[in-house]
Length: 195
Image 1 (cartoon, rainbow, N blue to C red):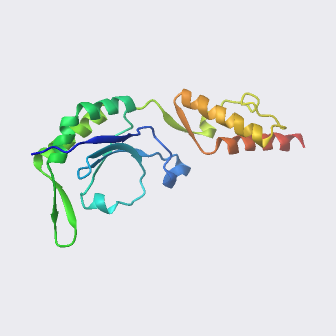
Image 2: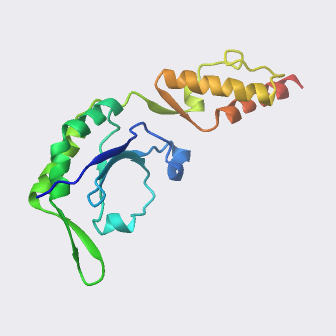
Image 3: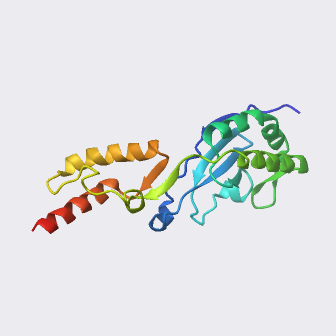
């Protein structure tokens, strides 16, 4: 059997805010996506939106949830090292007409290879970033420590927010909620206390 050319087109493993659950700090999950027809493999962030694309529903693409958020460089290494497993998944894939839709199916060997690939990805170290609300991340900081006073302008706050977001990321944190809005509220609270 002739093998398809397989391309790894995306590897995104850092958690993001799930917009459907942002108020509760809900985060995305990592999904392994394989399109056997096009020979495309991706790891990307997916959200719990209670929707399943039709190609996924009919098995024309394979989408599997990965536990946790594997370290990006390790996950890429696994995808490259486990190319033989991906090839088994793609080669064990077939489609058939069920009278209404084209349905994708995996043979037993392809299912075993997929399970092994998922296990290898789940064995990666976790991504070293986490999601934090501004309230939690800046909890022990005074406005002065953050560079905020009662006369700080909105433009200055935007610059400060950009720096604070970058600093937090360097420390392994992705902040959710608007840092600018958080800082503006701090400034406004300071202004109210002066009056």
